[in-house]
Length: 239
Image (cartoon, rainbow, N blue to C red; front, top):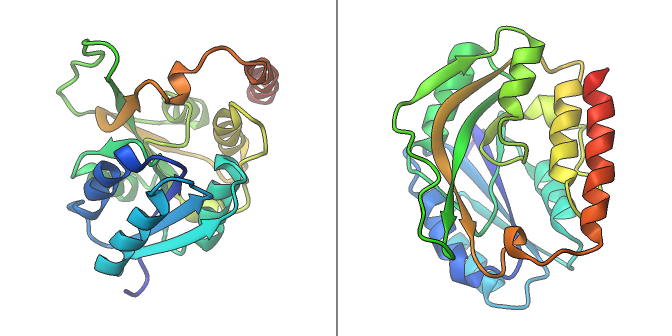
């Protein structure tokens, strides 16, 4: 594989029950020019074995096994390795629709966008409800930096986005316990290189909510840190 257009970075940690669905959704993308980077962050279940098995069957997949150091370090490792023109981050317990990458890639190229974004749909295994009924693929074209920043931060995490690699190659995920993803995107918006983001208002990305997911953990002291990070982001953005 020469000069992959899109690098997909997937940090993996103890998600054996969801990883196969995630990887199947990636390898079956309609856009095939991919570099798939799996960073196994010291998993103690079968996640590492699953990564290795997929790499044996698909030459686009690269697997790196690390000692457990957290999702921020795993994403940074993947970003350092990525060679594509664009980079996407995907959580290993989520999955994406087959035409997500092709849709975002075409939007980024057509709009000359630094970041092409979409919405997410919550797949809540604990409650029977549908939080998203969007069917139209309406596009918002950021006309200036403020509109583009709002489009990018519609989903505040690093998922649901296709970043131009040279925009983010010097921006790191910082070692906060929570909300480091919001800080990452705040630093992207505040970067001098960032000018335009476009948003497809359609949920290509499926965000899994289950008993052990981050969204369903009981309150912990680390969530107080999120408040401090959000204040820092507010200060950066209001400037």
